[in-house]
Image (cartoon, rainbow, N blue to C red; front, side, top):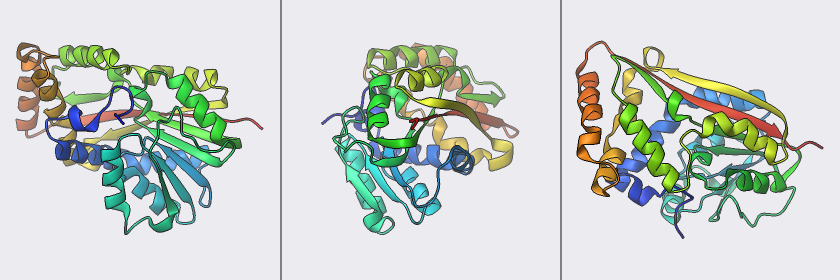
Length: 272
């Protein structure tokens, strides 16, 4: 069974373990603010929670800590990532984690089963995001909520000194689009929820800044592995990424540098 849509962990980065560490850094970067927003959206301890696209288990671990009396159903289509999650969580989750290897668009789970669902950095890779949201709508209880946490390429990060990202960003958009994903998904999250039948829709932004959490937290996100992998696959030329790599190296060498990243969190409710 292959990865979901435009993302396959085994081929996204030059090295699989490097990709695992990049995914971990993405969770640690903004967890505290995401947790605050999830609670504000209505996530509460004791709920039966669905995590769609659960990956190697780093976000699952945070949910287990936040919700000590909840059960988490972790749906992941990629067997390699699910294996990593089982290994990582075996002493942390106990019988509170239910692992399901399935597509989020066809989970096989019973209708009206979950109080709350979270899909983090998943919808950006889905060829049919509305169909996936409708499947989650089906398995939520009346009054249940779905929160989609995702990005938008044009808002992804800001740096000082600035990095030259325009060419690489546009090529990434094209490559991901050819694979069925959409790096500009962030601006469409509210519409996806609406088309899937959700109501009471809300949208919040999560901003992380290196002056607050430290520049080290951003370091794994600047790993050139995914870009060099696209060069290796013949999807981007070396000349097209040259300006980015030069500006990235200059940024990393700068003593006084800063970085901001942005996630969007959209919430919809399955009205009673």
